[in-house]
Amino acid sequence: MGVNEEIRVSIGERLWRRAEGVIDPFGDTEREVLPQEAHKFILFFASQAKGPFILLLLVGGLAGAVDAALYWGLGRLIDLLDSSTPRTLVADHWPALLGLLFLVLFARAAVMIANTVIEEQVIAPSFYQRVRWQSFRRVMEQPYEFYQNDFAGRIATKIMQGGEATGDFIVSALQTMWSFLTFLLLAGTILTALDPILGLVLAIWFICYLIAARYLLPPLRRAGKRRADERSILNGRMVDAFTNIVAVKLFDSGRREHAYVRDGMNRLLDAVRAMTRAITRVRATVFILNGFMMAAIGTLAVMSWINGNATTGEIAAAMGLVFRLNQMSGYMMFSVNGLIRAYATVQDATGVISRRPAIRDAPDARLLERGKGDIRFENVSFHYGKEGGVIENLNLHIRPGERVALIGPSGAGKTTIINLMLRLFDVESGRILLDGHDIREVTQASLRAQFGVVSQEPILMHRSIRDNIAYGKPGASDEEVIAAAKRASAHDFIMGVRDGRGRSGYDAYVGERGVKLSGGQRQRIAIARMMLKDAPILILDEATSSLDSEIEGAIQEHLESLMEGKTVIAIAHRLSTIAALDRLIVIDKGKIVEEGTHEELKRASGLYAQLWKRQSGGFLQERLAAE
Image (cartoon, rainbow, N blue to C red; front, side, top):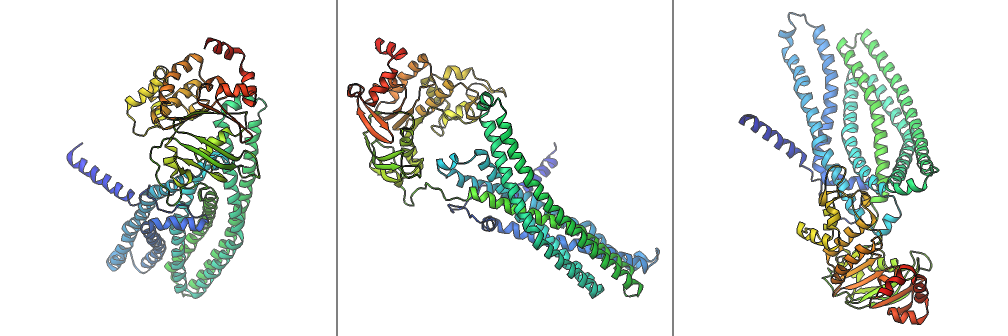
């Protein structure tokens, strides 16, 4: 590539980037909750790109004017041909001919290119992405319960569709509609100048057009909203099936999942059919109105020519305008249909995107520094919004550096206590203190930074093994990641992992929710992530439940060193794994029914003793004998 060519490429690339960089795709505002009404949502984002949209409005108007001018120019050309001979045409009318040539070759091209650049380069990529980015950030602020009550795929779809529909609505309104109205105004002016009756016919047609839109578009809007709802539900059902494909393969021998998805498809099909019926009514009405309009104007124009009141060129211009108006009006009705569908999609999306988070940082929330791990529950009650049950007037004090276990039957409230501690839910009464601070008065991020958590079902993302481990410490070096993996007895198996794209070792991807790894492998990666985070409070929810005895023994030594000087809260159904902790807290029906050491609770002959007795045979008996 020569120097001149490199310069041309460089200049061209700079021009592209300059146009594409007018709108910051990741710009944001301080607004906590996005507007809930569709029109306010659209105006909110339109105000963030006023310059490009005003420019699009101006260029859209010019596009309509150029379109009308072409048909006027055609009529003018025919009149010039009628009034001249082949020999004298250029000599007599060269300025007019040059003007028409300039209109076709330069003015029209410049307006259309400008219109395309503004829409496709300046607005479409960056503005659509800006809406999605701000929507995503707000949705990420929603509490855990928000995600429990909806399909993950449905939420993601709403964000994607909301961004696209918002941009489409604004662009169509400013470009297509405005261009149509500009063309209609100029066409009406030209026809009225030829014959006022022609202008009157066009005005009557436009009034009938508006009346048809008034009565036919609302049903179309409702049908469009229903279609958007059903499409979102169907998408959520399919994503749910794909996400839980193992359960489907193991338990769905009767093809129940097929029926579940087929029901969603049937509902979508009914919604689409209702919408297409509404579309057919609109199209048929437009065809009829346009037929009367073209016939009336054509008849009147020819009569005017017969009476000698109009030239051949004027008739050609008039008929060209109405034929073009026929095309544009049909397209315009569909554009209005698109606007309605986009509006309905935005309204549907705001139902998910524009919610005020149930759990928020207080306005004056403070950053919590690395703490000692002193935890207090003071008269805490929590019922998941019901009248009673789960947690009732709980009082619990976990001292810094203490190792405690929460024990109890399934549904006793152990996991709920952990979730309240992490502020995944807010207490309904009472308060929780961490190092003397009410956890509602500190930022959620700084609160959760105090905890290292390994759950019974390890949470892995469809990213590389390195990324999953480093999630515990942003910016961690490769050496730190590898060291944490070795402490979790994960390094050896990681080096043998290879994914479907040929990536291996720490670069290998684990699949959605870690499905490409065994349960024990996922558990060890989660433990490595917790070790790397090195938080002052450790929560171990069946942290070694998926490990065989040999691997568990290898990890246990590292866990012991990790727990030094830290507050530890363990949940385990295998009581042998927590018998050596400082204090065992027995929970039943949301209340503390017993607490003490392993030996104390065995002698008390209460609920713990019963649970221990049930597990004291088999491998536990052998392990106790060995100890």
